[in-house]
Length: 242
Length: 242
View 1 (cartoon, rainbow over the protein chains, first blue to last red):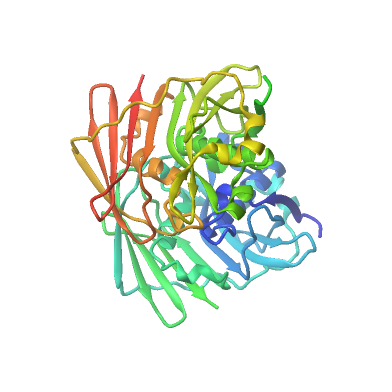
View 2 (view 1 turned 90 degrees about the vertical axis):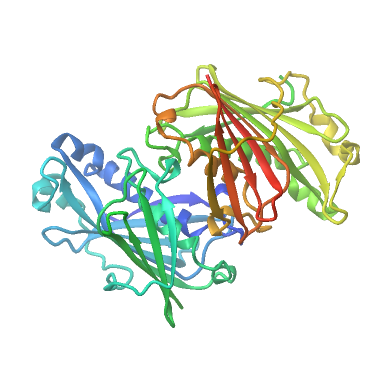
């Protein structure tokens, strides 16, 4: 379909987990890095926005995983932007094998931030170079879940450090998910079990902060909150087991 | 030179740190993954050894960094095996820019382990397919430093989790270095300062173990020990600042 673009990748050795399949965090990295590459290639990436003191901020992220590809497997990652409201851009993704069988569906919602005023910006500000790339194709998975406050059963402390941060010294998006993955018993991942991850990013965590990652297990899901040292909830997530 | 092989890479977005240069752990990953790829391509990799119940185990690792490449920079990674003693195989590496200027030198020492007896194996066991690839070129950096017990000033606890482990559920080599990097103040990394890292791997840490990473600062170096929950020192390292 027009304005859907496909990128081919191969699962590298450094991106597999103990099952010798692509790790869950590396799949998230492939997806979010492709978002950046695609936006840049089409002229509405952070490089174009920066001189206007604008940037994209990830607000919600969903990944539905039926199966994870094995080490060295090639796959196609297709992405497109659709369903834009005034303040939220939705970017969609599918991962498929080389026969076209989709095994991961993903959806991300982005706001545009004015870096001077620190406020969200209406997307029509960039309509001249952004609107031509909006695609009619529907989202490949259900909308982000509502995520409420949790009742923590297990809490892990973590100090935001070198390997966590981006050039703004904020914690990288995928590190939130990485910390949560490290609290889940690995037996959940052994059988290549289908799962869905919903993440809401609320505010950022900064270098040097000591954060708490709180977990609650329900019948069908593992729920998380990331709480900053000033008590603010920075992020909520649900890992739903299927 | 004969039996030196060069692999070309590009610094990917997911491999940079807050300075927008290749992170130190990603450089280690490029190096160690190339060791695996090169050994496999020449017929003495873990895939060839596994049916004989043998495997390579990394014992010592040195990286000398003059400068770290920027995001999207291409570089050439050249590797060769030399100076073999009966029990230790030395594999060397240089990283250079596309004009041939070397900016990283690295050396690794490997033992071959009998997976049934859990004992080291003499390298002449695999001489028929291994010896033809030994190269005359000297090591590109000085031999591994002697690393003695340290006097811990700061100690961090870490539970070995999903993102740390390989298919044996042992902690990945580069995760030891990653944990150490996370204890060092990032101001050390801001200026792309030359450094040398020496690591000795003694015994492995396993999934679920709570380990201690102990740090001591001396005039010219930051020293580390990783101590398992049974009190055994699993790993020692020195980051020497130049």
